[in-house]
Image 1 (cartoon, helix red, strand yellow):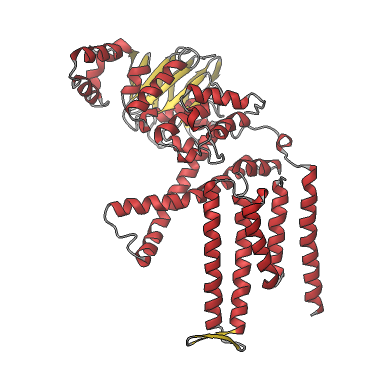
Image 2: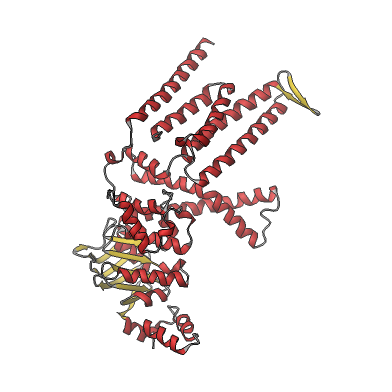
Length: 249
Length: 272
């Protein structure tokens, strides 16, 4: 089975609608479903090995984030009854609920976007953006930014290794690591901007700006419109029900 | 089919009060031949290549230019104001930038060039594979471009351009990321293209130029200070000791202990 890019985008829209409008109890199964889909369902599987690695890492960090956010809020937001006690620490009901709401929302928002980009080839996404009639230069900017984000972890590792090779204690501990990270961030971003300009010129030198009419690169498939329709309808229903619920209260 | 490239009295300034990047550059390159454009950094080699491709004219509208650039029968006065690809192809100094970042495999990366030129067809994969084979890159066909080594990237960058079969090919400091073996392989690729493509190899090192070029041009401070064939160039090499790493080349050659082999290599590349 194949999902076209508009279908996947409709799915992301559905995830965002749920994240903002539905309570966390509904969203946790959605997150689990997303993770399962990313590992088992072809249209949502990461397309490259590095995308797979990032996705797995993100999933682990997301679980940690939930625990941290829920724990911190449960401790600090002292409203309502104490839900449970861990040694000498009291965790409050309102804080735990707030922590869960925020963390689940954040994870659903970011996970859905990550699944989309991990499972979509840059080239297909570029074609889709062009088929919408967006100018070539605009599409290039988006794609070069995405490429920069993909390369960023590798670049950071390279800079850290170079600094380490000249004796700078960049990996000595979490504090040194964080300090070094902030120090390299601005030169890294600046050099990436320069690099993006160079890469843009290189693309232009390969005729990327010439290009044909957008009608040739439309990739709509009649069968996949069903999915788009289903996702958009579901999003609309959730929005309508939420508005009705908000008005009646 | 290879085209003639002719530049006459070409001068260029990026903006009104800036120093001239190029001054009265005149040069004619015969169809199918290789011209080595040599000179130290900041001598104007890259500016000249960018002017020929049209990237300079299209990006620097306020620049001040005079003279003429002629590509085959098309004359541009003073310079092309649009990118002339696929008539003129250019590989950049750093091949890493020539990788689009949009494709997951080398084959896709090379096919992207054809796609942007609106060339479609079932023979594209075989065409790309044939090119990869020619460049000794078949084993990398399904590798991710951003994971390749410098020498491999250099050849993939060349393939990105060559797949469009440009009649004029400009190579900007191609030996930058090449070691000895890769350089010789790259030189044999360039020699293999002679006749079908007019080539300009801009470099500050001599090795690739000596192995491939028919015509030698030396630039300094935006001006051409020497132009001649191989014999004239070799005869005048000592004049350019300060500008080119001549000593290093001679020193390397003269350090070969086997005198027969040394003479053979020196004769092959034209040094007596």
